[in-house]
Image 1 (cartoon, rainbow, N blue to C red):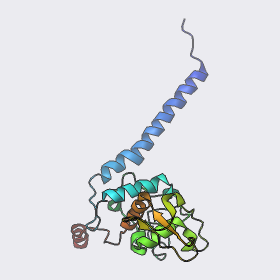
Image 2: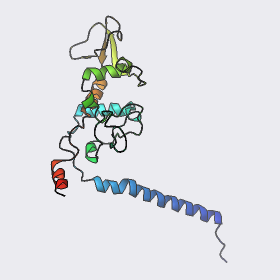
Image 3: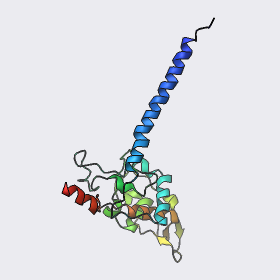
Length: 210
């Protein structure tokens, strides 16, 4: 005679199979289908690929956790006042054509950086802000990143990038030198300029004709 299977074992099998089906469905819905839908998306005409230096800066951005406090995805005006804050138009899929991985962010402890390169193009401002945020934005809760800089007595050597800080933020006789990581990070931030039209001209013509 055959012995009946333990009902507890049957329940465990059902749970495991059910979980695998749910996971497969979620993966298809959130990963596989969007991949095929967006695989042929073209970059907008005004979007340029990152340079080697900007890519290096992007890695510094990731390594220092900037994505945990800053987003790069302005919302549509119907969903929030992002455009009124000066963060720019709502982003579209093509804006992230050269981004691997995407750095959309999920928190806005600080402002959205989708267009920080347009809002603040100054290299001196970015370097100083990284060294001491409160020197440029009073009351800012952003941490300083002094390890991206070197404070030295005397003067800078040829080719070194001196940070021009407001009075009182560096001792007399000292200079603050930006390390290559800081310079690369600033170049990446300056590249975040998505003020071009969201749609390519051929897409606009197709939509207008409809």
